[in-house]
Length: 100
Image (cartoon, rainbow, N blue to C red; front, side, top):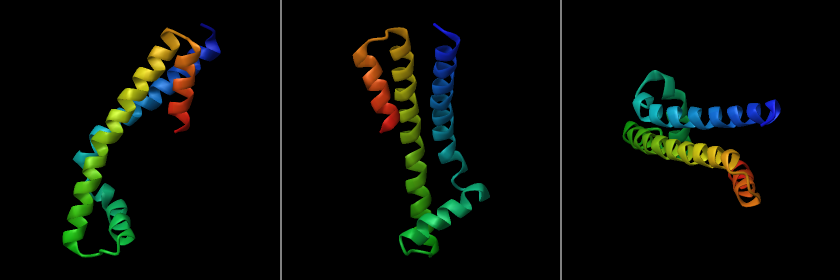
C-alpha cells in the first residue's frame, strides 16, 4: 500500500473513531452547560422555549448520540474492509457511505 493511500485510510478511520467517541459522549454531556446553546437552538427551532420542551429536546438529542456512534462503527467497518479486500463493489460502497 502506498504512503498516500495509507494516509487516506488512517484519516478516514480517525473520522470514524471520532464519530464513535463523540456519539457516546453526547448523552453524557447533554445536561451540561457545553450543550446549552445547542439545546436552546433546537428548542427555538420547534417554537418551544419553555423548560418542559427543553427537557424533551435534551432527551431527543441524547438519543441521537448512540445513533451517531453506530454510524461511526459501520463507517469504520466499511473503510477497514474496503482497504483490506479492495474490490469494485467494496470501493463503491465506501464512496457511497462517504457521500451519503
